[in-house]
Length: 131
Image 1 (cartoon, rainbow, N blue to C red):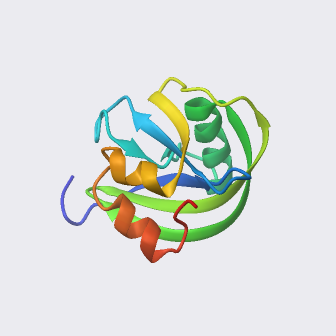
Image 2 (image 1 turned 45 degrees about the vertical axis):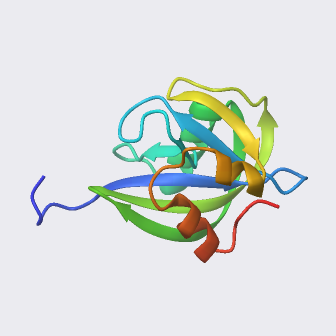
């Protein structure tokens, strides 16, 4: 990929449970294998952001979500990730194909887990940290 190439479009889901904990997944694949991150992934050709996010959330976490609104956009290497607030509307939490683990995390959990680069700073800046 050269500097003039566009970013690879991706989506991520910011989901809190009724206790205010944030949903994170432990990445199975690179980039960031073994690190904890917001669930999400690449947008496939012809997909809307919403459709891609619903698909990725179900694949990675087993949860069915309703996409509510865009929270922010980050650039990580060649990836442009649009992160959306989501609400769980069905499914059972489990680690899917692209995740080693999936769990609800408190603010103290975030200080203990190995997170992908800049996740904590980004979540703080967007005021979406877990309780």
